[in-house]
Amino acid sequence: MDIRACTIDDLERLVPAFDKYRQFYRQESQPEKIREFLKSLIEQEKSKIFLSYEDGELTGFVQLYPSYSSIGLAPIWILNDFFIFGGSERRETARGLLDAAKMLCEASKAIRLEVTTRKENHRLHSIYRDYGFEKDYKYDYYFLRLSKDVPASNMLK
Image (cartoon, rainbow, N blue to C red; front, top):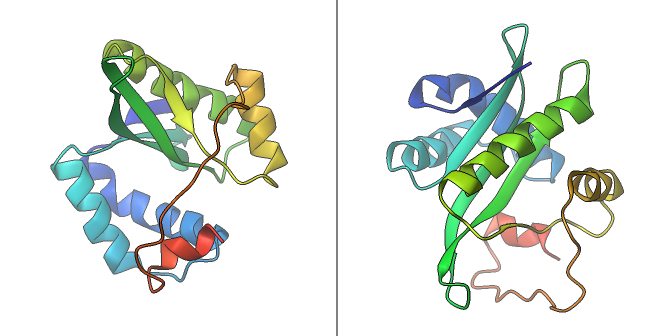
């Protein structure tokens, strides 16, 4: 297994994988929009994406977005997209991608890595717990729907 940071050279391999990821969450296939979206993020360095490869084949990815804690006076990272779709050892691939995310956080002196996942995604909950993530019982998560036409909002119903 090989884990590495995504570059613009990985875009054409990432687009179909990202499309498959979105379809898993009941979003329509939109490879051209995905290409534009990812290309912009990569070129402008607005997110950090790590890719896992096994025998030269892309097997998963994780995408993180930078943010900040005003209370902690330090950076934090948001783990927004995490998808394992191939390879012989999925848990090992997940751990490798989470290790890359953790190293990014440590290198940037972030105070935490945050992730939100659906309540019924028990497999992912298990992966996060086993890795050392702690469940937040203190705060509730809210969002303000700005457009009922935005497909991503449909996921949050």
